[in-house]
Image (cartoon, rainbow, N blue to C red; front, side, top):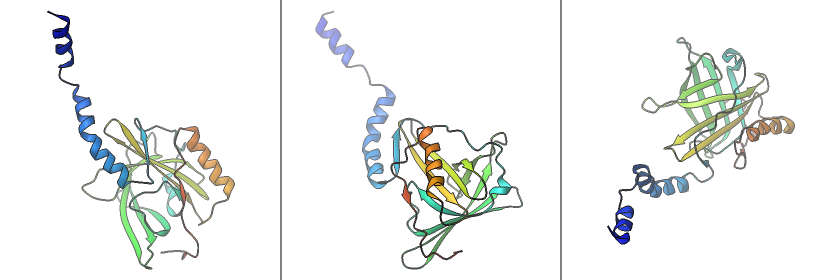
Length: 207
């Protein structure tokens, strides 16, 4: 067999299935990245930062105000707040509200579950019946002032999408508290560059 034939046969081998799928998905991913401008896409799988130790969900219940976040497509308003309450089945009822620019209040209701009681700070939250639950990991909280929530979705095996929320029991958190929470993120290789401040100015106490 000549060297030329060997060369042709080597280079005509069928490509790896993963490579083919990746090439096919590139246009779709490009569209996804464009549509999700401002959101935090990164290479590789989701990180697994440590969560709040001895998490007590009953202390976590009640109203939380959104202080900062990595932007998400489904939050377009201001005065964003979340209210958590315990359901009869032991799960957590989640009600998120925001004030739209036209003065109307947008509300969505979901349910959070603790799937692994050995790590109670790792919850899953679901807002739509047909959709899978999304991670809702409480990385840090003192229950009375602040909470740091992290969620991550792996997209195929190539990328992951980070979501982060800094929450407060009041619409304002001291800058040193926000810095402390952001330091937790950076220490766990979670990018904070795209985090934005949520407008909580002149908001009603309860929507």
